[in-house]
Length: 454
Image (cartoon, rainbow, N blue to C red; front, side, top):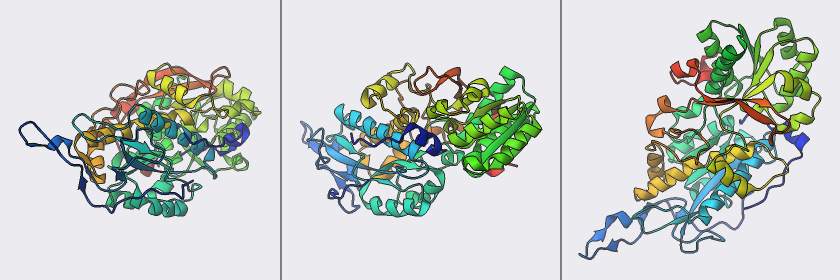
């Protein structure tokens, strides 16, 4: 596993927001022509068609560089992340966990399927690039690696992913998005996993109604697919319960939160949902409480970073702030979490970026295995296999039933958790409400939420 240099804790808090190097020695790849492995013969002299595997792009019969299994072929997956820009605090642990995940897969024999006469190791390091969260650079780097990869193991961010979406669609390149926007639930080439920001925030508001008896909600959010998606979820839940709702857009930067803080203090809503970055969240919560705000906050998952426990806002965060959770935190007791901790170790910059980076790879593994079982490891075959999955084995890291891609948007996961700040927990939070689906998300008809925000 290629080690990545971790950011300092303070830098991570400033950089981790909603999301929301390549190797010069590239392997030889073939033109995108369909090829087949030689078929085996049965005792009757007939060919065993189940042994044939069709491939086109990003798959070789030759082993991967530094192969764990030298008799295996190689599947090349691309990574487009942010290791140097505004989302580096998210991209670094995501990518480290992703590499650890596939190293474990290779150590366990690689991608295999009953009846196939070929197994494959997976390479996620040869085509691994940082776009610095710049959409133009993201698109350029994607176009460079596209002729050599079967699929994308990671594409970080919605604006950056939208810059390559048309190419992903036209070239049948399956991609794992590093983000939770509802947009991805409607794209066949997007292999999303957990509840989106819209659903997560619906559940958080439903939780606050049940737990605190709130009568009003204010949403402070970044405009666009991240913040707008969560704000639309809060609006939907407010309508469900007949709550007063106010939307207050804001912009990145600690110094840019005065208007939002003023609106909170003046309006005194019972609940404020936040969809910003961690540093902005600390400024909003700390200064609003210091200025006389008496309500509560619930942030979307990317608003939290354990480095905030060292900020001046820590006492206020512990007192009135909770954070949504579309997945169980680092220390959860599941076989998948145990395998993750064993593979990754104890990073100095521990955050749940590692946890979700690991979780996001399970569905891609399932799609590759299904495609191989179908005898079709072409790009089109992998997309078809992904959209035929009725369940994915997350080794307990997500609830039973997660990964029903065959069911379309209606079957997307609608469960989330709520966590409280806990200085004793490894990532600074502990669960106060386990997986649940609130009445708003239960009745919700899937849509691209942020487009409906009023």
